[in-house]
Length: 392
Image 1 (tube, helix red, strand yellow):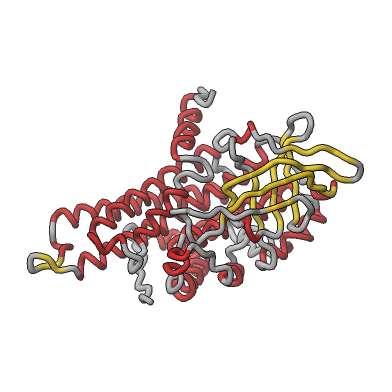
Image 2: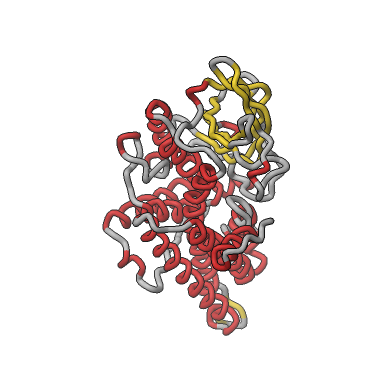
């Protein structure tokens, strides 16, 4: 079991832009990742198992609904604190960050924003404490980038609804206590429904044989004539904009999380390059390795500034969906490029589980696709700056 020696790069002194609360939140998460995640994550990734016992620790550092008001069990933090939490957790592993992102942005967020007061009181405190784990059902076998084409549907029957359909690629699904499921009513309008584990006709088979996010639990949501009490419909908002607003929150967290991956790969490569001797000197003293490392820290710094500014805009209620898409797309692509360059710095050692780089690289192949693919986010930016829709 290797010791986590990570030292975070801060080339432009971005810490000076953070408040004391931001630094306390970040440092607590960083310490937790070093102590609890880093020593075990390689084994879980190798064995394709989710370390469910980490859920309690995620709750204790405030990773579940950090911006949810304390009234409902959240930490009442701002958006930059949320981003920093995601950065530190993903520095440990993208799969662990996925668990926190889904819980916060895709489950707690819609219940808080669009749920009834009874729903908030029933679910949010238990989700914040980790007693409940949630998942988010939007993507379907035949509808990913085009969620408006979903076929999962429900109809009214007496004092309940009857839900039918299927969702796939759902993080947390195999063990989730509640699922926020998006489905169409008979008129074709999209609504959110809260589906509790144990409801008859509701199944959550696990997805196996993944090369990416191996330490994360992924599954399907299957609905066969599931009876949903009418009080389980989210009353505050309907239409496709409702689930997309949840994705905005998740994408924002990913934009920060990807920085954590990049920083970890850079730190690993820098340390290795200083220690690895070839031709009688450390490889860090060669021009090509310095080029790699200098470009890495440049891109990390740009991504840090992008995420910080986006966090300021989020706190002010001014961040647009298109701005969030740009940050998610840029920062994940940046992290993927750095992971590949860092792997080259380590040579053959870079593919082993003794180092985190190859695990990060494989995880990023999922992160670059979920919550909106790399190409879809490019089209979102394109539509925003031209006013023309290239999706149809």
